[in-house]
Length: 165
Image (tube, rainbow, N blue to C red):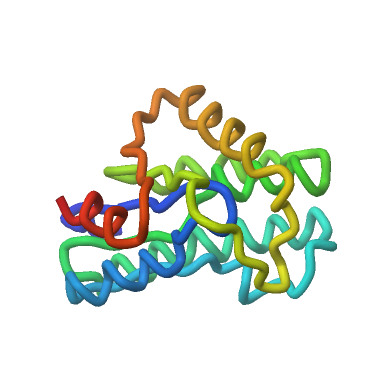
């Protein structure tokens, strides 16, 4: 991986604008972004431990791949902590390999996206009634790792302005 590339992680519960913002920031800064690779690999919330391992490996590989072509900054829509959270939520267990994969990527900055925007169904999302609880889990996982995120909240323009500054 190119150590000159700053890795930015957009992190938080579903339907908070991470995907749209990662793409938008990549356009503004004329660089690359890494989408949530799970969306390319699964079509429902019914998946196996093998699937979650594939997702974790694919997400890690994509970040490494995109650092080769990024322009100073790489915006990442999700990380391996997120994969672990959803593995625990849907499968009740986190495969050990996901913790190892997490350590392969060091993000320079975390932006934690708040749940103060409307939840939008997209075919995969199913936790609209658990947004507060999921936000709590996402915060706790960062705290356990002593990661201090920047909280992203407000309307879309306010969110973009906060990230750009």
